Image (tube, rainbow, N blue to C red):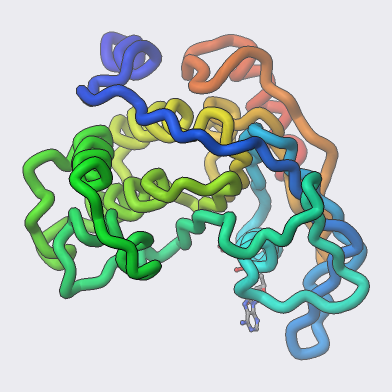
Length: 264
Ligand SMILES: Nc1ncnc2c1ncn2[C@@H]1O[C@H](COP(=O)(O)OP(=O)(O)OP(=O)(O)O)[C@@H](O)[C@H]1O
């Protein structure tokens, strides 16, 4: 219980969240259609991401959650009449931070340089302020002191934390995360849910997860995706502000409802 109380309270990582000035952005995917080899994965699927809110997407393995995320990221090509729209009418390109299921760290770069990868790819000079922010994020994900190490010397969970720090480092209004905490032990997972919730305040986030309690802790809108062709069910909206306590009775009641929806 002590440990649960601790993770339900203040974050044990030392550095404060780094507030980033981005305007909230609402995004809507509608009439989405995608087929793989004649198999209709989804047809006429709609999902709305409210501005500045965290939407969690759950559903059975293989239903199409990653594919939907990849459509938003511009990495999968949907078919007509799919529409991806933003409330400011501007394209999404260049305004997305994407954390894939695989950590996608570059093995020849240090941990710190992997966190700074976005700026490197944009060929921008890394300022001392950015390097300090990257180091602070590594501290927040529990990797202080590992800045100079290569990814190969880290465990799977540590690599996933570097990928999370890299995603949090990106100053983007839309953040897409595909099972970002799946490789972590239970307590680290709870702590990093808090770090993500605190650091992503004000961003529009879509997070895929298989963990109902995780979705209830940090999601504002929870959707279950089911069926073939798949559809996205109505939102479940946990009360209060993320990160919510794991022992909140309201969350436990909603968890039962979520499991019912997952069971179909
Ligand atoms: N590039 C591809 N070519 C052909 N089929 C694909 C491709 N990508 C995904 N699929 C198929 O589409 C379906 C949905 O895959 P997707 O990865 O989106 O599911 P998911 O819900 O994210 O699953 P999981 O929870 O296991 O990650 C699966 O049947 C998968 O085999």
